[in-house]
Length: 105
Length: 449
Image (cartoon, rainbow over all chains, first blue to last red; front, side, top):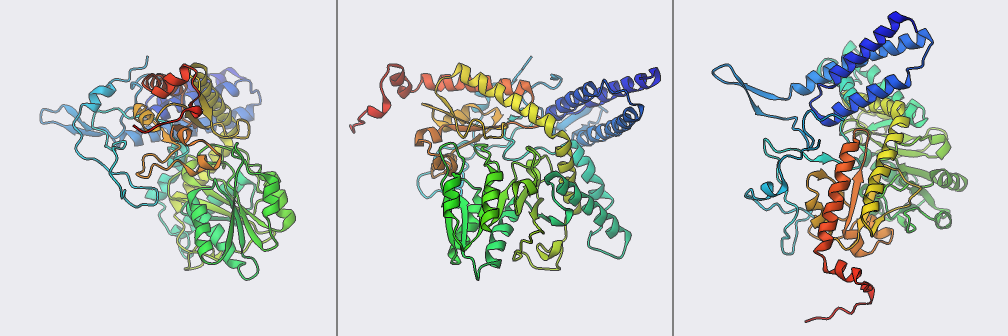
């Protein structure tokens, strides 16, 4: 495919992976990373420019969805600001499961 | 790589404040002495959550489903049955879109989908509704012994109303015998109800053949497809199914919504359970919850897209789990047919191990037990009893549920934990010692002291 489209697709891929890493939930985070990677890999050989464009648009919508959902799940964290201006966590609603927080798949 | 963090022992040393009595499956509290059961305690603030391996009980909502639902919870809150303003119109169009998405997944017409509050309500509507509508001429209903509790209980209610019910036995592999099924159909049979995929042992029934038999004999076929929809390809025309129950929270959708497919050609008549303003073709009155219906529709359309990918992945993970466990542990039995099954529901019985102690040892993985030994009555699961499992094996069975969000790391951790805990429990078991020495347990004469 054309160089401009290719660089657009690569930057979309990188942005989607960056946003997916921000999910606090282990299962959502690993699923998003895995699914994005597999979807881009499966469609890597596509040549038809219209199909590629349709997929790029879908990818941009999915990127917006990931950003919204990451923000939404972060809204459930309870942060309490103490008198001296430091943030202290009062409690987590999104507790981590047995795998450590940054241990991605 | 994996850091489970807090060990089990430190958690057990924490003082336990109250003993929670688990109620029996029929809701009545234990009448006999209270047993020390798996203690229900809320997780503390910094305690880590268990891994989720119970996808047959319920599934987490897919983020895409939640994204589709939120606008209808916040902004587009109109009643879809209001015909006079934009709030109603936009809500109604969302509901109709959702209906079409559900219909597309099962190969039906949108007019044949009724939104309900879940698969339990759909099952009740289908069984009681059809039986009561045709009650003047037809008084017989057939079902199987491995059905979900709501189906069995609906049949029990019908029996008290004077219907005669046949509960078909299943073979040792969990599949219903087709000749026995055909032989039990009488001229006054109105309905046959068989679930497509069993929620406890994952067995897939031969729905096409059953549909063929029912169509040839003029009997309506109802199937509880709550565990099957979105996981295996389903087409109501191929399966010759007249009624199908769908559950939202089993396919990564919201809890509190489901659907019932009611065939229009040839028409299936139902006596409605819920009376009111005549919504949903008069079969289920009441305001359709637009956000939940939109969530169900989104879940169905996502499931249709992802079915191939999820199926491959779930099969691979299930094979990985079973291979790992059976290669290290002897005397592990998989309940249910090995081929005719949905891969994501793995029910294993570990011989010579006590079920409750195994579940307690596997506390950092959220699993379900095949037996209801956490209830006060110590009854093994009726499904395992129906497939002829021995009492002791039924008590030591565990159901592993694998789904869209399960990772290889979770499966590996579960398998390793299972292997170590089962080995540890077997080391402590005198029965295991005797088996190792070559004694046949069935030949022992147990004496009283």
